[in-house]
Image (cartoon, rainbow, N blue to C red; front, side, top):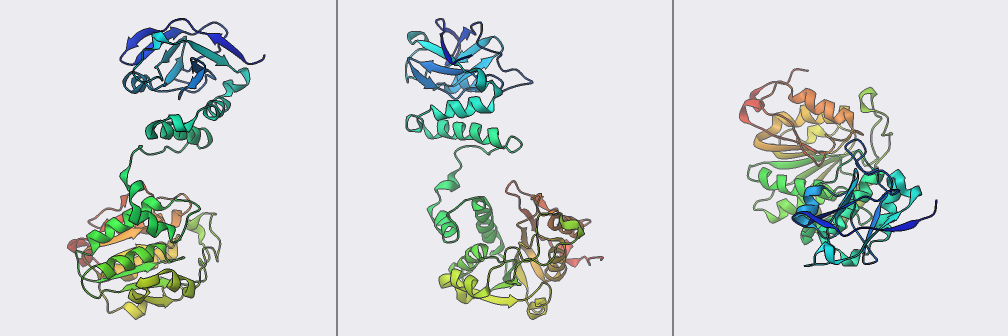
Length: 358
């Protein structure tokens, strides 16, 4: 069956910015609760494609701007022309039998949209639909988060990566947790340094704060150790290797605040045994080094100190999460699971008085 355009009858106002027309015969099945993106309908207003489709009806009523939904035997639509009424425009539906698979419908509709004609929220809505088409088990967060406009954060991030921004939100959490930790006395430590992106933020924070704190960096600088039985199958020994000289260069003007302790965890911990710490960043991905770091640093943390585990909420790092959960089981403070995938603990005096039972 070839592509075909079907004229629609004059819309009738439903509520707010929403108008309805009956779905013509032969247009294919509409969406329903069991198949919310079944329809392959594409909608045109005076010859210009509008959308996104599959929109929530409340969004059509309150936001309009071309959103529509083919639901059951009705088409719920909104006028894409600002300040106009849908009954003053001509609407046609494009039926593509091959596009009724859902994914093809979304791709075809997105290809016909001119992003220049959309506002930022509309572009995000289209991006969300495309993302859900390929990754249906992951949900994007809310549109309009201000940290995407944080020029300093993005500049610091782009010192290390411009290929993707997958850990930008985690770097924001790290930066904000440092503000909390630096209200307390003590040094800072990181276990698992990789190229130094997190270390850069930590060294920068202490350089801009009063005093002469240091950042203690513990890493093999030869990649991960061999994963154990609790670590799953994602990681391999030697992954994430980066040499100490490269990390030192990456720290730039803040390298003088860093103290390097190269070696496998926990071999070099004794060098910091007489220190007290207000902040510990764990990014070692695996059970054993996470466990060993908690065993060493926890008794040396000051009240109000922050432990931030970068790997806590990732399916690829089950060992790191297990080590955190086991260590803090029975202790006063919980491990807070953040939507970024990190886990955070703020130490209280009662926890520091407890002895960890191995």
